[in-house]
Length: 155
Image (cartoon, rainbow, N blue to C red):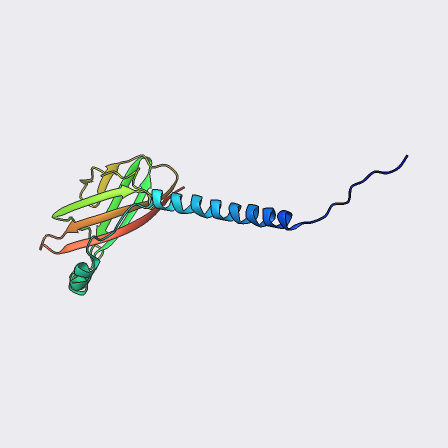
């Protein structure tokens, strides 16, 4: 019996098909990544960044003059936000607005209902595992604005 094998020849069409398939995969992955990046982008931090930058140094100096140190912790369903002054004494703000959410998207954003317990702000919050952010806007008793973002990790 005779061995009937057809010899394979690499032609220009084979090379073109290989290049088209390889670049098609690369382009498809890039499009998928770009679509997901745009879909999960939470938006702007500041609407008019140039205008906000004009008063940044003054606002920062006033905030630093307060000497506040803010920390947050979460255990047993309680979210605790502590504000202490430069002497380590607890501080109660005249007004405080806090948003709790994930750093990557706004779906989980919520406003904790904090209450002052005499030493810290406490709110009942159940947090899933992972990274969380607290966006804090407070006003001192003297009217000084204070803004800070705290990062938390829930194991």
